[in-house]
Image (cartoon, rainbow over all chains, first blue to last red; front, side, top):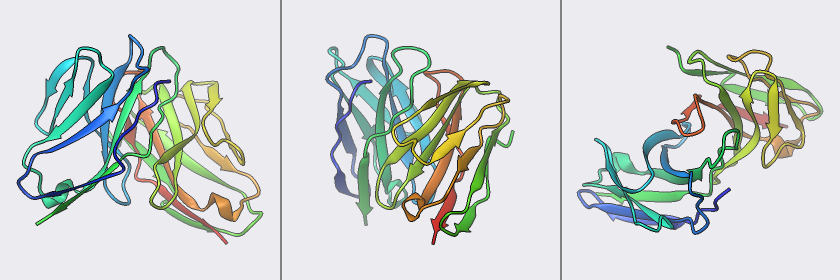
Length: 111
Length: 112
């Protein structure tokens, strides 16, 4: 399984764009990159997934360079409600593999 | 669709007691997972299943057991509860390996 490395924490202010980068140097050819968001006392929820280049949905954008050894989750114009823990997951390279969460990045948004 | 349902939401156990955390999903998902999350920490995988009759250990399986007799249900059994098992437990499911995972609301367990 590809190991991921993210910053432990980040701080931002309302209205700013936040970029959280995840390193995954040993990503396999068949691996996808998926980001989840977790609010206190809730289970994680899916934000976005991508394989290469750029993916955008109504919540966020995901930028993946050509070598796929890292990825960046971009949250445009954050609000207080975006304060949460964000997890980057890589996989699965084959069927039947586990879904492993790392420590995640705690994003704190202030007014 | 109710999604992923966990019961109970809260439970206090005494040391040495046993209990089963229930998890059921109505989305016909193949994959199901159990995680524990200690305060201020990330999720640790306890056990997972890729289909009925198939289970496998995760990162922290000691002290727990699971079964997967149906596609819908994936109960987690705690035998001889210990204070170290005080945690929030989350169940999750997904259809296939690259699909998004859906999580239950969690079970907050305290062992005293």
